[in-house]
Length: 43
Image (cartoon, rainbow, N blue to C red; front, side, top):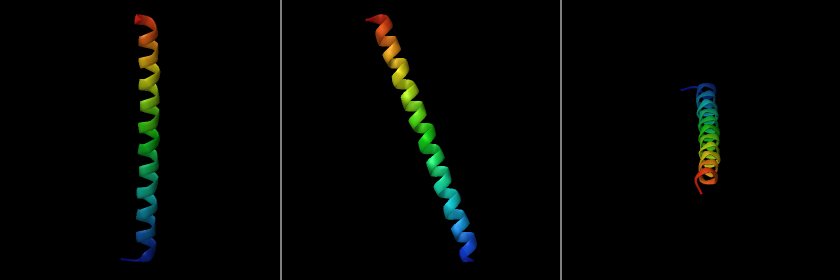
């Protein structure tokens, strides 16, 4: 396997990991915001 192909695949994996981490973070923050809103409404 050429070094260039290996480097490109590792770069792609890292980018996908960063992307999934960002999606997870935004989903978590959205969930926490909704939880706070619902708590404010009901209590």
